[in-house]
Image (cartoon, rainbow, N blue to C red; front, side):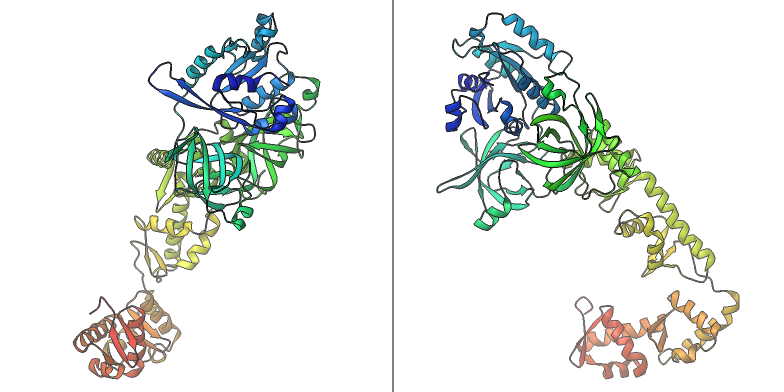
Length: 635
């Protein structure tokens, strides 16, 4: 259809956006065209508004290209030719823009010089807009032949843009690429609309979904070189870092996304909420109002599109006016953020069949129908762009999250996320520990269970110092969402309840108690060690009977004695005395042989050699040929 969009852009900006020879020949827009427009703010006349204009195809054969150009719009100009009125393509464009939640629009009636009944056309347009988000939007009549309405349109554009909220800057720049080309002597250039953050010349970026790293060598915005581009502006980037090999691997084309490297990864699956508008159109579109589970669809996000298969959570089809949770399964990775809005089209019939919002980016398709995932998605679908909803839904499902990277793939800044986490902590929604955040109720429940496990062990085995760490880890493993959470959990409990001694965990107030029947055996062992402090009996001579072996185990567990090797046990106080004498001797001499030190401390070879190896292990001494020396910090 030829409603005069490109001619209108030319009249507004002085730039003809149709650049392809075929577009000139056929007199219609086939691909995206671009222009810039400078306006004065109606509220602040001294302030200039630099506006990027994207001219998109209107003909039904090129809607795929149209969708690629409208993913980052602040304001839509919906062009309706007065002599044609509201056409099926107009309706499809209207629905696409509303699936993407473009909230601001101006309807421009063109070619008014060719039609007399303008009020009838206006009335028809208002009927189509009634009840929708653009119900009260401006409707401006214009003619590029006579100049009617062009200045009024400029004023209206400035007014509508001036009323917009400030452009979102969450410090996470993304550029959906809409053009890629090479210039001789310059190299690869990409263009797109910069959203969600700013970019400075020299910044490192990643091409998604390929993951290839590049650098913004030079930036232009509205045909002017810039050291830095701010969000909401049209940019052209000259990219560095693309060798012949990396250029092939990058697969850089329309639909690629340039962003910082820490902002999430691509996925072959997206969990989404999908809706189908309940609007009457032509018969050709009405046939496709039902979106069926298992159907192949074309997923349009940003400037790109990917083939996917849609799986509905419930039922076999979604009908006009319906909304449902679904999963999109792709044959190749896609890069999307939580909260991103998209459009679905039928690739075989070439019509728009629905749209929706991304709720989650699972790494695999399994688990879509699990109870916890369904509850998670239902919670998110209530308000997919609310930070508290995103955070609490994550905590409810995952229980434990690494604080660094939480919602990196969302339109919220790190500072906003950190601030809300702090507030949720004060509200006892979550607990922060050692770089992790935990759901408060889960943390309390698991903490109590861990403490109870240690207490139960003490009750069953009062003679033991504590529960072996490996055994506690095994008992707790099934309760944890991640194995690495165990150490964080234990560190948190050590503050108030537990103590860790090497590979043993005990309740803070617990003291091992030797059973009465083993006390006599323990006294015999203590007496034997005390009678020969530097030349103790071998382990076999210390503990002969079963009672003596149990008593010796208790003495070792409590740290009263130390086992140097399988044959040698020494009282801790005697070990520490010998250790201190060895250190003092080496401070005097600088170095000494094992024989020299053994004679100095008056012990035997069976005891001293394993004792010396222990000093090496504990970092007091080290071996240098036949000599031992003190490690740095001991001398």
